[in-house]
Structures are given as C-alpha cells and as structure tokens.
Length: 73
Image 1 (cartoon, rainbow, N blue to C red):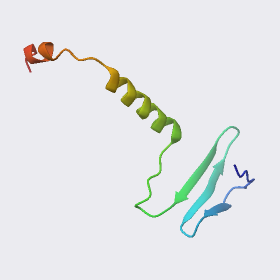
Image 2 (image 1 turned 90 degrees about the vertical axis):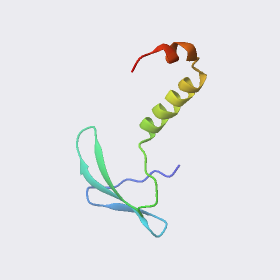
Image 3 (image 1 turned 135 degrees about the vertical axis):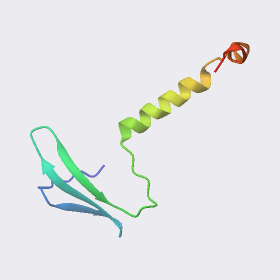
Image 4 (image 1 turned 30 degrees about the vertical axis):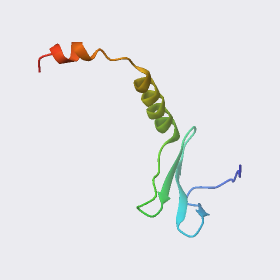
C-alpha cells in the first residue's frame, strides 16, 4: 500500500487518466473528487461489500414456491 500526505486542492495521478483531488478536509473527514473515464466503475467499498453479502444471503435462502403461487397480487 502506498500512503501519501496531501493538502486541500492537491491531487494524486493514477496512470494517465485518473486523478484523485482532495477537495475538503474537516476534523474527521476528507472529501475527494475523482476524475476518470466514464467507462471506469467507481464504488464505495463498504457499499459493494454490503451488496455482495446480501447476494450471498439471497443465494442461500430457501423459497417456498407453492406459497408464492398462492399469493394474490
């Protein structure tokens, strides 16, 4: 892992086309801006992990299909 210190309005370049910009710093938060090509997917790690956990739970869930057939919509 590379650890860098940055001040407000300073940035980090990743490759030729990704720039991470420090936009604001408060006591316990750092706001960043990310400039990257539109085709690149950018996710917050904690949300991606939560979605993956829910998908795993759903895949293991047992569904009573006969009960679903009886349900009126």
